[in-house]
Image (cartoon, rainbow, N blue to C red; front, side):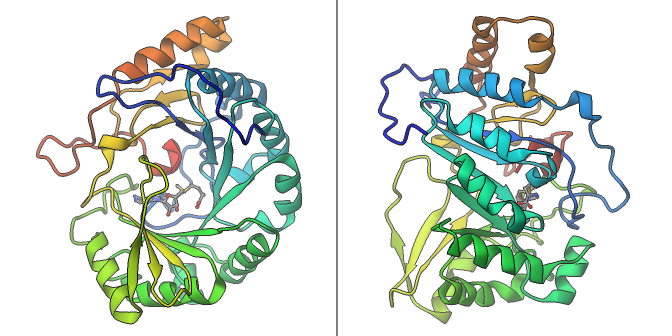
Length: 337
Ligand code: SAM
């Protein structure tokens, strides 16, 4: 991996001056969990396997994005570890010159056995999603089970060198918002960075409401009341999380508030869905197909043209807080969170 990554190139710039920098790749829309706020209980209609971008297509498209200015890649889904032979993809992406950071977001259930292979293949950062520390509630929330497995995976990942290890929590009013302090304690005791993410209207089944959302400011106050925190300076402009350290030196937490404190003005992210559609915002209503042209023989220059056109038209920001807001047809699990 090109960790120096100071290669000079002209990055794509959108109409608001934002340079592309970060690519989120969904490697599958399938998931082994059925989290109540993310995916419907009845078996959803997943993409047929031949609609998924192959590893070769993913590597090709990633190279083009890197030429366009991307240096950070995140693999997500669905559950990325459901994709067979994932370490092979990690190895091919991590060897692309210009990839400075290769990360993955996972629910952790299948992580433990894959850790060594992922690390050897060049994965250098991990986020593990976990919304409750209570076994019974975990079962209700995920409609499956496995809290102990996820906790083991968190500890193993941290101990095997994925540091700082980030744990993503989505607080939902009346569901797990009584665990915010428990998660802050978890961050300090387990030496992991817990990141609280505001619930966004991207769920299956239209359950989102402003009442269910726990605003970032409320999360910050609850944690500060438990143990004093102070801001940490952002290490780069496009950082989505507001970072806070515990004043007693016992660790760090993050708060990601896309609804109450939108960071669209600094957004440098593009996303590719598992079926090869390019999205320039989680809330985009339009997507650009890359798979069709690729399979019809498009050249790299053709694909760069499509990517450049999409990036030039990147939305100013999401409209969640406006009367004009229209939900995208896709849910988070089919876009790639
Ligand atoms: N399966 C992997 C996992 O669980 O981490 C990756 C995909 S999952 C869609 C990625 C992240 O999106 C998870 O942390 C999940 O909690 C979060 N997420 C899903 N729906 C969300 C929503 N409506 N608002 C905010 N976060 C959401």
